[in-house]
Length: 333
Image 1 (cartoon, helix red, strand yellow):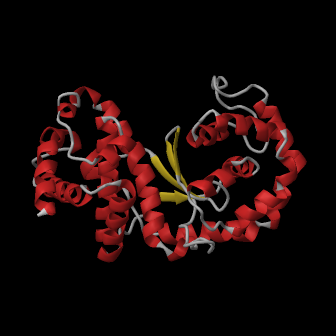
Image 2: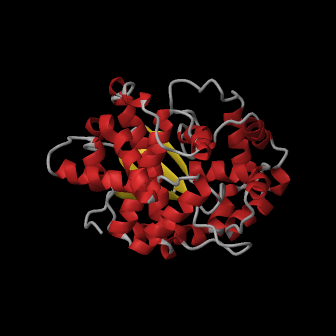
Image 3: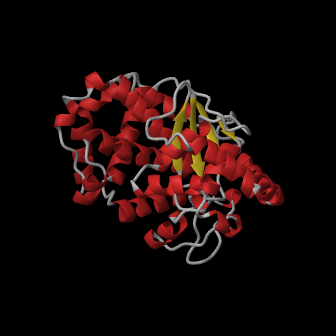
């Protein structure tokens, strides 16, 4: 582990408000249809506590947006545009997709439901999630790990533990100079409750590094977009399953890079067993059969970067597709 922490762990009531609102929609039922899983007692309690508010205008607005396929990242980003506890808009203008009545309805929902009282009642479990997460990130530094690939990182990396909804996925959002990973604890088998944040290092580091890494790489590729078109003409050796999940070259490269970076971090900073388990899971669940090859390619880059051959990942991109094809053949032998 590094001896210098660069991940800030905190809670944010605006994020908790959006998660509570999500609990009153059909999102929890839909997530169980996708993947049956046990949920945190607080999440279940929040659903029960807010059951009578399912028809509230603020809930119905969120439900309508979900029905239209609006991404959760947009909802949570919007929540951070509001002041707390006044819930006044703090940006110049309302995003075009946000109904103008949603903000006053959110204020009414927060007051009528007495969410503040519910959170106070549940303060011990929220405090435990915060304390457990802070303990896990106490000696973790992602920026030095990512610097050889992406250069100096100016953004602040934030981890927000979430024991409400969504219970089965992380959310990564960029807000100003901050990159936030909002993450639930790892799901357990069947109806069992999820693992505590401090009992599963691989999960909490994978969650944060996946989201922070993806947002940082997306920004890096945007800045260097003029250097990518020629490289993107070379197709990557991926499965049809993986290509269907990630249609564009940039999306494919980002998903491959993030997955390989997580595998390398787990091997170097947690243990080899966790890294192997992660690679196996990614190969089965995401069709990422090329992941061992991608890990070997990134390892090669790290060695050659240290030797001064490449300044950043963008200098490596022209040879990347060819090296990945070679690595695929080697690891499949």
